[in-house]
Image (cartoon, rainbow, N blue to C red; front, side):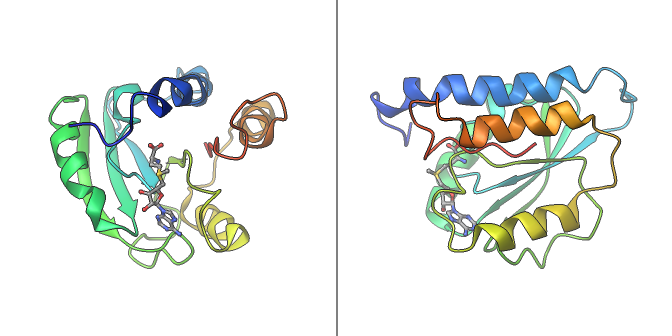
Length: 160
Ligand SMILES: C[S@@+](CC[C@H](N)C(=O)[O-])C[C@H]1O[C@@H](n2cnc3c(N)ncnc32)[C@H](O)[C@@H]1O
């Protein structure tokens, strides 16, 4: 069962694809034997799972447990992703997630609806491991967040 309607779903796909292309561009040097620790904030029904790289170990966070039945259905389709835990929490205060524990934080179509974007970004910085991710990756991701040429720019948020 799909929780996004036939109108919305195809319009959101290009933003998702671009976000994960940026991630893939910066992955080739990582050791394949080490799982990539990924936190997805506001995961909803798991519409991004299809784009996750091999050997991803996912922590899924959402404030709303209503989506979990869609997420449970969806995750069976994507065996390249292993699951660490599902955390029910506000992104503004991710108490259940340890400091410096994540390689990647994914957040699509969520920041437009959180109560406090600055608090979410502060939490994202807290949980991310120190990285040598090149500045252009961060820049590309933020262009995707706020780019005026995006038809759904108020909805399209991607944090890598
Ligand atoms: C529009 S849906 C997007 C779902 C998914 N990220 C996607 O790309 O399809 C927004 C999701 O963010 C969650 N959400 C909104 N505000 C949140 C917050 N402050 N903390 C955690 N989750 C939040 C909602 O419960 C919902 O699942």
